[in-house]
Length: 172
Image 1: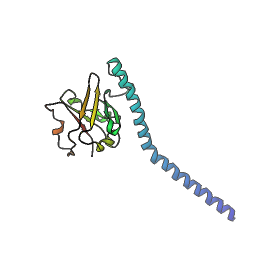
Image 2: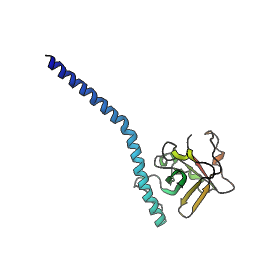
Image 3: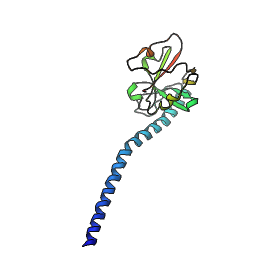
C-alpha cells in the first residue's frame, strides 16, 4: 500500500512539473516568436532593398507586405543597420523603422522606430556621431548635432527645416 501511494505521488508531481514546463514554454514562446519574426523580416527586407537598388523599382519583401523598403540606415558607431520602410507607420514599424510618409520630400527626413527593438542602441549616440542614410538615388551622411528628450506633444521636430535634416524618433 505504501508503494502504491508513493507511485501515485510521483505521478502527481510529474504532472505538476509537466504543467509548469508547458506554462514556461507558452510564456517564453511569444517573445521568441516575435524576435525571430523580426530577424526573418529584416533578412527578407535586406534582399528586397538590394533588388530595389538593382532594378530601380520598389520591391516588396513578401507578397502580402503593406510596406516597401525605401532606404537603409547605418550608424557605424553603434553597429546599427536597418532597412527603412514606407507606408502606414503602425504596420511598417512592426518590421523596421519607417519614414514618416508626409515628410519624405521635405528638408526634414523623419524616421521613427521602436526603442525596444530596431532603435534600441540609439541611447548610446553622442554629438558628432555619423549616421548614413542610403536612399534609392542618393546617399546622405549626417553628423549628430543634437539629442533631445521631448514630450509626445512637442511636434516642432516634425516641421520642415531650412536645411537638410535627419530626425530620428523613438520612445524614451
